[in-house]
Image 1: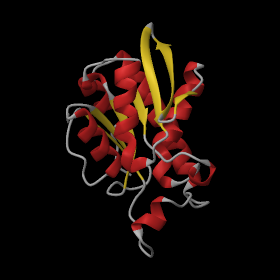
Image 2 (image 1 turned 120 degrees about the vertical axis):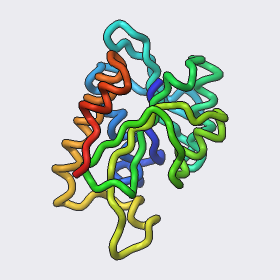
Image 3 (image 1 turned 45 degrees about the horizontal axis):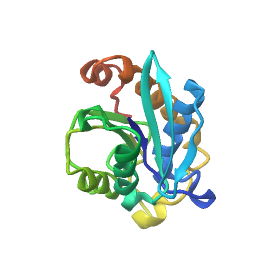
Image 4 (image 1 turned 180 degrees about the horizontal axis):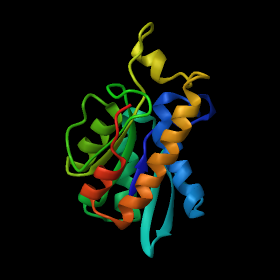
Length: 186
């Protein structure tokens, strides 16, 4: 199961906080899937990647309540072990363009990850953090809810493509080789 975190609605579509949605959209394009609204809490599709059935989920509950949608998908559609879950999100503490994949860990203050961990009562799931950097001249809230600047867009477009490639690679390979191949700092 692969979850891209973000906020629903046109207003947030291209914001830094929605990089999880952007990566998931790239995975959907590569797999030929189509995310459909399943209920009020999430959009999802079941796709085949290298012969494996994979659930793709986009929570529609806003970032800090993402866990509700993930839990609902777990209950209704799939019941994977949490160690077979990948959550994709933004990370303020990584420079723009950086990717960090880990097999487990803490939420690091990320409200979306915190919500997923609380809802599933688990920490043992894979995280893919996409670096967006910290703001220098404005509040964190304003920063994460703003779009990438014109000069950031080419780097972030490449990051989103690489992150989608990492997702597809991870479905077919183990976490260690995925980390070795795709983790990078910029």
